[in-house]
Image (tube, rainbow, N blue to C red; front, side, top):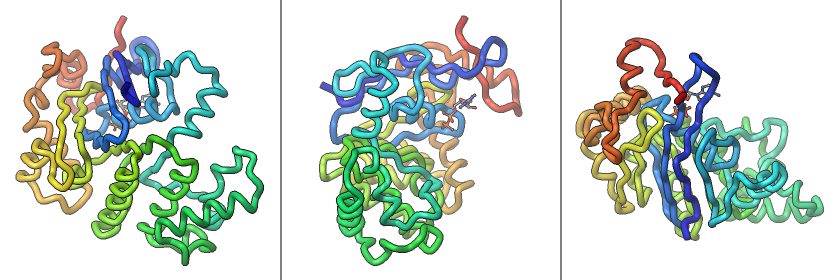
Length: 296
Ligand code: ADP
């Protein structure tokens, strides 16, 4: 049974003429212990998909099952509990609380479990130690390097031993050395059996993944298995267009990526062969942010 099973999920923001289709009948099945990189241009629906998978948001249509359990049928409290117990989040902006020490930040998710303060701090300390940050336990986030801050955020995401880690551009604010360390850390966590979903603009990072899913206009337009250690074949083709040195290069690279995917730069969904209304609309409004009409 798949760990994550998404069937015909759509997400529409807004109403009437001002509505945007952020996800357009997406199907995605992820087995336990996959390491999935999600790539695609800005506005293609990556974060919306992550938010739905992470139970931070609900789809407008479609069904979502975690370990065979239909999550739409859960009450608000059951959803919150499932999110807390099964899912760990890592964000580009780290999102540690600035007035708490590393130790207190990492211990925070345990507060909802009814553990004593001593047991919480002990568990947090052992997690920080495991990730190699023991000498920074009592530091405030502002006194850490970017890589150390993200390591602390990863320790916090892991403290509840989640089965799924969702990382939205976790290396977006890091230099290349820290990016490598963080990706190696995620790779170790993956080897321990955790399922990892990471949104990235950087094809180089597909080296750590076992599968790469490419999105455009709210749809999955390509999905490929990849060998850890190697850049995903489609991402590799795009890399020959540009060296990836800056964030702008990364974004330009994603555009290049879409050109090398069959159907990626056209208005045809390669899976269904259907014409995408989204692309038609974006073509008709050059220079405007992409916005798609909701289905009637
Ligand atoms: P990505 O993560 O690939 O950049 P997003 O999932 O953030 O894409 O956004 C997909 C589309 O949905 C975009 O057109 C975006 O403007 C729109 N969108 C995202 N969140 C909201 C929101 N809260 N309200 C309205 N539109 C939104």
